Amino acid sequence: MGERWAGERCAGERLQALIFDVDGTLAETEEAHRAAFNQAFAAFGLPWVWDRALYRVLLRVAGGKERIRAFVGRNDPEWATTENLDTLIGALHRYKTALYTRAVASGTVPYRPGVVTLIEEAHGAGLPMAIATTTSRANVDALLAGAPGALDPGWFAAIKCAEDAPRKKPDPQVYQEALAALDIPADRALAIEDSRNGVMAARACGVPVLVTESVYTAGDGFAEALAVLRDLDGVRLGDLRRWAASS
Ligand code: XBP
Ligand code: MG
Image (cartoon, rainbow, N blue to C red; front, top):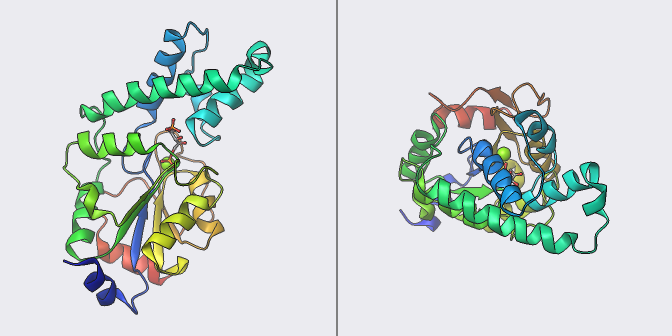
């Protein structure tokens, strides 16, 4: 089905595109991110270890490089004041990305329940889809290549990542990029997110949001969302159209 035909068919309908977050939404990736951060710290001889309780707090800062910088600022005054900090963070993050992409590309992180069925249904219905994430493009490519379920990256009209939007969520930049690529008004899209930063980013540019809570965000409170679900298991396109119509 051609993209142009699909867009014309949806004209006039409230729901004209889906925009998916990645980490915590398409897949529970944060434990793989956390393991890669810790392996990178160890490989660089740094005494930093992020346990789950600490990582839950650190996840309030979107973006891996920004997360490391926030951690160092609060926990390691010696490194925080060194002029080599930018170089260290860049090198650590490249190393962490290599570890993470290797793990995820080998299929260790599956899609969350209902994700593949819903995306296949939307694709079959000709509904345009995009990705809006603060993570690096290599991480998205590795997940789409490795996660069992064979989602085709070509099904997404736009994949907008950290490289496209350096101002990370809750800044709306990555959603603005996705909307521009989809060429639809914000209130005709529906975002699917798992975090407060993600919800705030989408709402800041007028995109309605459905939340599927993830292991690190359950119970965070999402007053600005249309609905808050445990996951997408059993959720069909008709449900999304009804939620979008109610926004
Ligand atoms: C969640 C994030 C990401 C990852 C780390 O992204 O904050 O930064 O935790 O990825 P999403 P990088 O918007 O998909 O929920 O190390 O590549 O930044
Ligand atoms: Mg997320």
